[in-house]
Image 1 (cartoon, each protein chain N blue to C red):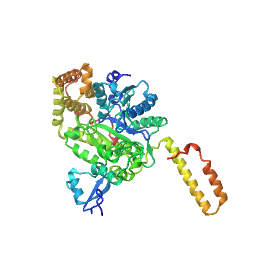
Image 2: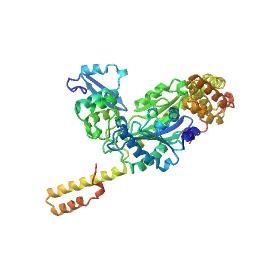
Image 3: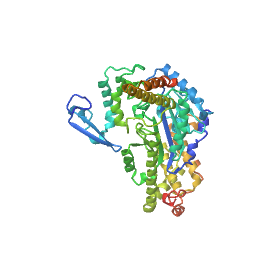
Image 4: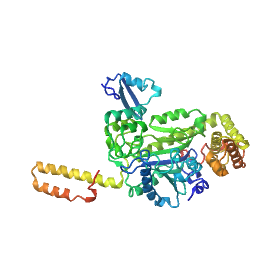
Length: 165
Length: 374
């Protein structure tokens, strides 16, 4: 198993912390474990490791050279500030942020409030997807009459949802 | 409304009439929102920040909830005025450090405040007396829904509301309650409580939030995670934990009255003696002593009428409030002497603690029936 931080050396230190009733694992190689001083269990939290230096490093390794096309933010800036540049940055470093979010939050998916305008486009997206699936099936089954109806339904979907997420 | 409208009125949430207001001073919900694909305040250039500010402020100023609000650009507020807003918990210390490109909007009742261009483009907060997290959220949710019809908030189907710091992503919500736990502190059980609360993913902080010291036996309990749970779930979980903390504090009070009445009476009596006879008092000492007067009122060592003046002193003896009342900048020494004077004056009619009356009372929170009495 490779070290979660440098991703090059074999991991030899295996850490498990129970946060909020959920166990979280980090596997580190000898040198990274020394670098982050994880041998002292009292002064160490996985979240700190992943949120602090670790997170910045992960972003650097995963998306070296990535620059947010909207705001020009880079991984080095994240390392420096611990904050992102704009909302689009979340799509520029997705994989790296996922492990960070996993470490500090209860889940990885938002289950709370959906803004009304997003709600409509999400409904639109779901409807479009289900119609498209049906259309694929109809074509596969060579039911062209049904396929034609479905095609018209897709074409006639309300325009306001056209720029779905 | 201008800033003196704020200082002239203690704010509805100080008047403490919410449920469990003896132990829970106030409940607060904060929501973080950002405009889609616009640089976050910490990354935006000055001109961009001002553009974002104007776009948001126009919409916020037009909210029906913000009729005759205090609405100020931060560069137009003096350092003292900003500090007053911090002491009222209407803006954060971080926001008070901002200037051009940031603004604050506060409703006249001081129960709703908006920080524009703090760490996020918009941080809105609803404040209620006592334990009323659900009520505070309901109001803020309504305001948020009005705002989102006019502002394009950054939202992601998987990650929810997108924020400058990944620790706030998802609901963007921080729910917190300020609790007064003198008996748990006196009984040396407070660290156990803090550790237990931390273990279940909630944070306990001092009086002014992150990184601040617990003074006056006041603590803030809040959620730490924002992604993976619905707003209502976070609030329900937090409310349940706070109710448990209230129960522990009440038990600790009963146990102190029962097992160490001498220690308790000594603490309250000393607090009374020092507060009513001092000619110089530091802010921290004042908070710690006032805490015991508040506890004494809860336990009926003092008449119920003393509750409001004592609660007001918690606010009025803060450094910026003192300087505002003196209408000039005061040295630390002058502040301490003015603070002692204000306290002596306000507590002049407070009778000495009455231990007989306290013992006759039905319990530490006599006006609230115990849960099994219902």
